[in-house]
Amino acid sequence: MAFATPYAIWVMRQYAESVPFELDESARVDGATVPQIFWHIYIPLIGASWWRLGPTRCSWPGTSTSMPSSFSPARPKLTVPVMLGHFTPPDDAPWTLMMASAVIYAMPPIALYYSVRRFM
Image 1 (cartoon, one colour):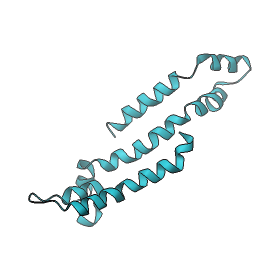
Image 2 (cartoon, rainbow, N blue to C red):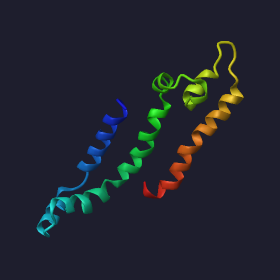
Image 3 (cartoon, rainbow, N blue to C red):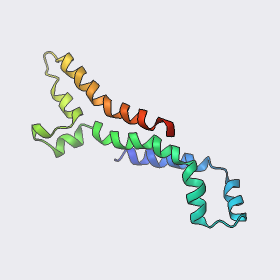
Protein backbone atom coordinates (compact mmCIF):
# COMPACT_ATOMS: atom_id res chain seq x y z
CA MET A 1 0.00 0.00 0.00
CA ALA A 2 2.88 2.37 0.71
CA PHE A 3 4.07 2.13 -2.89
CA ALA A 4 0.75 1.70 -4.69
CA THR A 5 -1.16 4.66 -3.24
CA PRO A 6 1.26 7.45 -4.25
CA TYR A 7 1.50 5.92 -7.72
CA ALA A 8 -2.31 5.85 -8.02
CA ILE A 9 -2.57 9.47 -6.87
CA TRP A 10 0.09 10.53 -9.38
CA VAL A 11 -1.61 8.74 -12.29
CA MET A 12 -5.05 10.12 -11.40
CA ARG A 13 -3.63 13.63 -11.12
CA GLN A 14 -1.98 13.35 -14.54
CA TYR A 15 -5.26 12.26 -16.10
CA ALA A 16 -7.20 15.04 -14.33
CA GLU A 17 -4.70 17.66 -15.52
CA SER A 18 -5.08 16.45 -19.10
CA VAL A 19 -8.76 17.48 -19.14
CA PRO A 20 -8.96 20.91 -20.84
CA PHE A 21 -10.18 23.70 -18.56
CA GLU A 22 -12.29 25.04 -21.41
CA LEU A 23 -14.69 22.11 -20.92
CA ASP A 24 -15.16 23.20 -17.31
CA GLU A 25 -15.75 26.81 -18.33
CA SER A 26 -18.23 25.92 -21.07
CA ALA A 27 -20.20 23.71 -18.67
CA ARG A 28 -20.37 26.57 -16.17
CA VAL A 29 -21.62 28.91 -18.91
CA ASP A 30 -24.31 26.34 -19.78
CA GLY A 31 -25.42 26.35 -16.12
CA ALA A 32 -23.91 23.13 -14.78
CA THR A 33 -23.16 22.87 -11.07
CA VAL A 34 -19.84 21.65 -9.71
CA PRO A 35 -21.13 18.10 -8.97
CA GLN A 36 -22.62 17.93 -12.48
CA ILE A 37 -19.33 19.04 -14.02
CA PHE A 38 -17.48 16.42 -12.01
CA TRP A 39 -19.95 13.63 -12.79
CA HIS A 40 -20.63 14.36 -16.45
CA ILE A 41 -17.27 15.71 -17.64
CA TYR A 42 -14.40 14.65 -15.41
CA ILE A 43 -15.50 11.12 -14.50
CA PRO A 44 -15.97 9.94 -18.13
CA LEU A 45 -12.72 11.53 -19.27
CA ILE A 46 -10.56 10.10 -16.47
CA GLY A 47 -12.35 6.74 -16.42
CA ALA A 48 -9.54 5.14 -18.43
CA SER A 49 -7.17 5.78 -15.55
CA TRP A 50 -9.40 3.71 -13.27
CA TRP A 51 -9.18 0.79 -15.66
CA ARG A 52 -5.42 1.29 -15.74
CA LEU A 53 -5.04 1.44 -11.97
CA GLY A 54 -7.44 -1.38 -11.15
CA PRO A 55 -5.16 -4.32 -11.99
CA THR A 56 -2.12 -2.69 -10.40
CA ARG A 57 -3.95 -1.81 -7.20
CA CYS A 58 -5.25 -5.36 -6.93
CA SER A 59 -2.04 -7.18 -7.83
CA TRP A 60 0.64 -5.23 -5.91
CA PRO A 61 -0.41 -6.33 -2.40
CA GLY A 62 -0.54 -9.96 -3.56
CA THR A 63 2.88 -9.98 -5.19
CA SER A 64 4.65 -8.78 -2.10
CA THR A 65 6.14 -11.59 -0.04
CA SER A 66 6.94 -9.84 3.23
CA MET A 67 3.43 -8.81 4.25
CA PRO A 68 1.57 -12.02 3.30
CA SER A 69 4.19 -14.22 4.94
CA SER A 70 3.99 -12.24 8.17
CA PHE A 71 0.18 -12.37 8.33
CA SER A 72 -0.30 -16.00 7.34
CA PRO A 73 2.51 -18.16 8.73
CA ALA A 74 0.47 -21.37 8.43
CA ARG A 75 1.38 -23.46 5.38
CA PRO A 76 -2.18 -24.04 3.95
CA LYS A 77 -2.91 -20.28 3.80
CA LEU A 78 0.05 -19.02 1.79
CA THR A 79 -0.26 -16.64 -1.12
CA VAL A 80 1.16 -17.66 -4.49
CA PRO A 81 4.36 -15.54 -4.31
CA VAL A 82 5.15 -16.86 -0.83
CA MET A 83 4.43 -20.41 -1.99
CA LEU A 84 6.76 -19.96 -4.97
CA GLY A 85 9.42 -18.78 -2.54
CA HIS A 86 9.07 -22.03 -0.60
CA PHE A 87 9.71 -24.03 -3.79
CA THR A 88 13.33 -22.92 -4.04
CA PRO A 89 15.53 -25.15 -1.94
CA PRO A 90 19.23 -24.29 -1.74
CA ASP A 91 20.28 -27.28 -3.88
CA ASP A 92 18.04 -27.52 -6.92
CA ALA A 93 14.72 -25.87 -7.70
CA PRO A 94 11.78 -27.85 -9.15
CA TRP A 95 11.51 -25.76 -12.31
CA THR A 96 8.52 -27.58 -13.77
CA LEU A 97 6.48 -27.03 -10.62
CA MET A 98 7.56 -23.38 -10.42
CA MET A 99 6.70 -22.68 -14.06
CA ALA A 100 3.30 -24.38 -13.77
CA SER A 101 2.55 -22.28 -10.69
CA ALA A 102 3.68 -19.10 -12.45
CA VAL A 103 1.39 -19.81 -15.42
CA ILE A 104 -1.57 -20.39 -13.10
CA TYR A 105 -0.63 -17.24 -11.20
CA ALA A 106 -0.62 -15.20 -14.43
CA MET A 107 -4.05 -16.40 -15.60
CA PRO A 108 -6.33 -14.07 -13.53
CA PRO A 109 -4.61 -10.80 -14.62
CA ILE A 110 -4.62 -11.96 -18.24
CA ALA A 111 -8.32 -12.84 -18.04
CA LEU A 112 -9.07 -9.50 -16.40
CA TYR A 113 -7.18 -7.64 -19.11
CA TYR A 114 -9.01 -9.36 -21.96
CA SER A 115 -12.38 -8.79 -20.30
CA VAL A 116 -11.87 -5.01 -19.83
CA ARG A 117 -9.59 -4.12 -22.74
CA ARG A 118 -12.38 -2.42 -24.66
CA PHE A 119 -12.56 0.17 -21.84
CA MET A 120 -8.84 0.93 -21.93
